[in-house]
Image 1 (cartoon, rainbow, N blue to C red):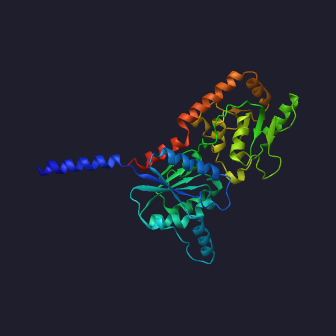
Image 2 (spheres, rainbow, N blue to C red):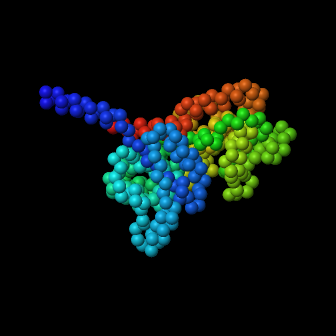
Image 3 (cartoon, rainbow, N blue to C red):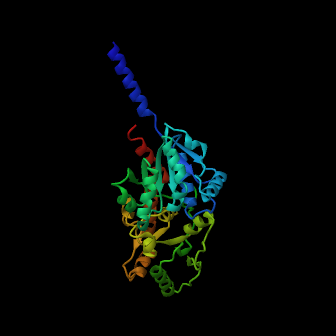
Length: 353
């Protein structure tokens, strides 16, 4: 009888253990951005999507902007920074996750993350811009923090560290609260956001000239002055991408190899363009074909000799254009949302539960 009761208790405990999921507790910078970085909007969209998808299994802890400013001052005079009270408590029910947009931000939060670990908490990092020239620097900082999980948005970064840490490839996505199909008419031909790829830029200008089209914002919009954002407000950016047929997307390594090294990651702009049902033209990141159909964007020969031919083919076959953008959109909504990423992370942190 005693053995039966013990077995029954064991089965009951096993049942409870399998049902109770560990929460994902996001350490948010939303209330402590001093100088808002370029990727801040993307991270806020990620956090909001995780919170919705988590269905009670995702929690957000907002960091204190006043405390952060005081900590900076204390660090300057040689003392350890202050930490929020939650860092001194042990949470058995969850895994804390800090989203590091770059190495500078991870370093600035290093003490807070170490304090969480010191208190016995489990810790995860979600890392955005981990470039090859900084691999050794990332290694040193991650070693100091000693996280339980590391999620890299770039596959090549993940592959570099996969034998060192308990790490996983979890790609980016788009903030679908903003980026969506507005079903507006495609009245502009080309748009190129941010960096201007010289080769594709010249190919577009030649295309416009060959088709008696002016180099104007009505036909082709691009950044004409360094460090000038074309559309700083998200709703305007979404509207402008929606009304454009072709958006240029090229991995950063093609224009700034010194900064990125060989890392050629698929960034938010690809997902955002697909969400707006705008055709991507340019160069594929190495992982594009693993996330979307292989014909999901238009690439050209190295010397761009086929640029006019490929654009004309789509211009003359609007059904083919719609087929590609619709298929991309359906694939995004089914497999590549931030909600899908949230499911993946929750599955990982609960796989041993």
